[in-house]
Structures are given as structure tokens and as C-alpha cells.
Length: 295
Image 1 (tube, one colour):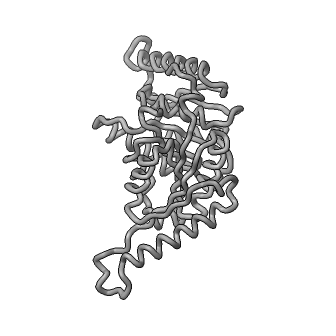
Image 2: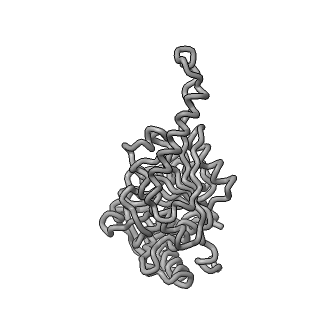
Image 3: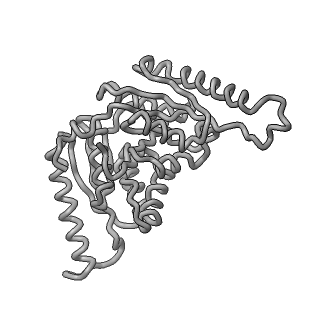
């Protein structure tokens, strides 16, 4: 991590997955703030699922006609929703028919987007269109960062919590989180101990692990301070990682939690994958999931 943070992490193309409802308002406003800061282009993208083909014999209208009607209605809803978002008059607005998780990632890839923004919520029209687990599906398939945003957000985060296990993915997530935080904001680097609740004796495995983790965390703080003017601090946490991160974020009033994504080993898919899912499902603040390399 030697290149300048600003040069490396500037966001030039943003995609906001939206159903034109209240659930994605925070994502739209955060995209607006990022676009103004980084002179980025924005696509407000809606996806409606195809009308079921297996019931077509009992309806009088062709499924293709119904799909197009739904697509047009979604596009109108998106246009109405972004009308009062600053700078959105210059955005591209699109609505397509397909599997939401695949479509969002395919369009993000084809447009060389820097990041995907989505609404964080469980009861809005976004979930009815996208399905309750679509956010998780987008994150699992994404090859670029995904930022999930609560509806209340209107500006850049001021206090971000970045979970570090010292893999490339977690370092990339922390690096991107630092660039998302407001210029006078704070980034807290956190490591969750693998031996929570275990009493250590001098020189034993637990003691050596904790000392080594503290050293690596301090090194990460020094490195990040060389690369950004944001305030950087750190914390060692204990307990189940997902719960420990969520609890600390609540106590410290963090408005962003950042985690690494897309390590390919079996243990990551079984263990770390469940941590990311728990944080996304349980967070009250924005959540950033970043792949190992953010270019």
C-alpha cells in the first residue's frame, strides 16, 4: 500500500441499484455526494424480474408485454425519485428486466463502474422487486466494491469502522473506507481476536497471537496515516466477529462498517462469508464490502 490514497481510490463511475422507493433514498444521496466530490458519473439502475412464463396460458396479455409495462413503470418511478437529488439531472436512468443480482453485476462490469450502491432495508419495494437476499447475492457475485446504505443517509460518512484480518481484501476495504469518509472524519481499524474470552499466559499461543495482532494493527495505522489526512485510530475487539463489529459500531456511533470480500478459500466462504452476511443483515449504518484489489 504505497500509492497515494486519493489517486488510487477516486470513484469515477457509480451505479445505484434502486426501485425508485424510499429504501434507496440514502444510496441516491450518498452517490450524489460522491459524484460531486470526485466528478463521477452515475447510473440509477432498476431491475424488475420477468413475469413468470409458466402462468402465461392463464393470462390474456403476453408476458413480454407485461415485462415491458413493468420496466416502464419502474423507470418512471426512478425518474420521479431522483428528481430532487442534487446533480441527478445529469445522471443516466435505466430500467431493465432480468435477474437482479446478475443484471446489477453485469452492467457494473460492462460500464467499468467503480462501486455499486444499494439501499439497506428489509421492508421496502426494493426488496419486493429484488428479493430479500438480493443484496447478499450481489455482494457474493460482485468483482467490485458494494456499498449498502440506510435510507436516512444524506452525506459522506464521518466515522468508519474497518475490520482488519490483514488479508489483501480487508486492507483494500479499509483503504476504500478511508477515501469515503469526509475529510475531517475518522477511520477506526479494528481486529477481532480469534481467542475471545481466553485468558492468556505470558509466552503462550494466545499471548503471542494477541501481541502479533497488536503489532500488525499498529503498523496498519501508521501506514494509513501516511496515506490520508483522515484521523486514524484502532481498537482490538473480542467475541464472535460479526456481533463484535456490530456492537462496537453501535457504541461508537459509526456510520460505516467496511469488510473485505471475495477471498476464495473454503474457510473464508464458510466463516468469513457468514460474518459479512451477518453484518449486512444486522447493521444500522452503511456497510462496505470490497474485493481484494480496488483499482
